[in-house]
Image 1 (cartoon, rainbow, N blue to C red):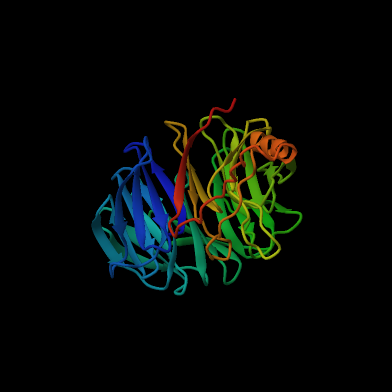
Image 2: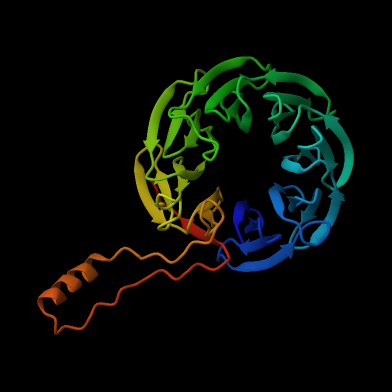
Length: 383
C-alpha cells in the first residue's frame, strides 16, 4: 500500500520500492518487473518505512522507519539500530561508510556506521531538521532545519558543524549541482536560494510564481549536463540558471506535478503528474509520465497509475520506474472511473443510433483499484 519511493540498484538490476502504509519494502527484478521478495521493516517487525537510500559499495539498502530504527536490508534484514527523535531523512557517505540521519524532534543528526549499523555519535543542529544531503566533492553534509529557517553544514569526516546558513524561508528540499558547486535550497513559500557549496556565499534567490501552497511542495532536480536546475510545482517546471537564478524556460504541465528528474540517458526531463481531479480533489483518471527532450520539447505522454508518487531511472538500461499510490491526494481510495471512449467505439455508437438493429457497443470501465499500489516499468526512446 502507498508506494511512496522507488530506488534502482543498477549493479544488481533490482528496484526497491518503499511501501509507506504497508510496513514493507518490495524488491523487483528490474528486467521483468517481477516482485522477488517483500520484507517487513522496523525494529518491532511492523513499522512504516519513511525513507530509503542505497549504499552501492555494500550492495545494501538503508531503510529508515517511523519507529526510530535504521535497518540495512538486501532482501532480508541484516542489521538494525534504534535511533531517537523521529528520524526523518537520510544521506549516505559511501567512501567513509557513514549514514547521516536527521532526528527531527531532537534537533540533531545521528551518524551511523553502515557496515554494522552502529550509532557512532549524535551531533546537535537546528530545530526540526527534516532534510539532509551529502556533498561528496566538498566532504560536507547539509541539513535543512525547518524550526528556525537555517541550514547546518557539517564536516563529513569529523561530524562537526562548520557553519550555519540563515534563510528567509523555511527550507523544505535540498539539491547539489556538480556543474558549478551550487547548493539549491527550496523554501516553503516558493523561494529557491542558490548558495556556493564550498563557502556558503549566497548567489541568488528566485521566487516561483505563482507561489506553491503547503500542499504543493516545491520539487528540485539538477541537470548537470546542461548546468541548470529544475524547480517544479503546480502545473509547470521552471529551468533556472544556477549562478543567477535567471529563468531560462518554463515547461507547462497538464496537471499537478508529483515528481521530476533528469533522464541521464536522453538528457531530457521526466515528470509525473496526477490525473484530473474534481472540485472535491478526487482523482478522475490516470496520471501520466511526461518526457521532454534536451531542448525542452515534450516528446511523449504515457499513462501511468492513479496519483504517481515517485520516479527513478536506471542510467545503464534506460528503464524508468514510476511508483503509483492508487490513492486520492488525501489518502482515500479511488473509486472506479470511466475510460475514455476510443474513436472506433464512438463511431460504432453513433452508427447504432442510426441503425438500432445493430448489436450494442460494450462500454469499458476501469475496475476499482485494490488497496495495493503499483510500479510502472517503462523504456523511453527520446531524441
